[in-house]
Amino acid sequence: MAKKTILIVDDDADFVEATRVVLESAGYAVKSASNGKEGLARLAKGGVDCVLLDVMMTGDTEGFHTAEEIRGNPATAKVPIVMLTGISQKTGFAFSPETDADYMPVNAFLEKPVDPDVLLDEIAKALNQ
Image (cartoon, rainbow, N blue to C red):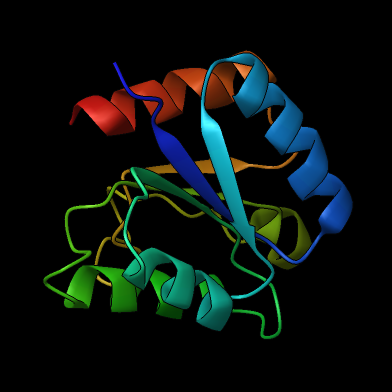
């Protein structure tokens, strides 16, 4: 069975590298992008099975817009998205895909820092949806 490929879209290089280690040790292949525009370009090339997406990158809501673009493109609409961010800590607002699906079309929403086992479980669930 071929390795599943995870695209990490996050502007924090330390976070990307730490997450890469966790994902690769679990048997995933990893690609990365430092912002939404770069992430969309990598996703358009194909070969991505799931996206880990930050919210606050070059703009405070960039990840929400990137998720909408992924879902709005027929070629990428079915790719699972796990949003992984610290936005709730910064803003004080609680977000959930169940209550905020209109602007957060993602499979899962996790707050940083996240336990590696929880992250791997959510990725596995998203890949099986």
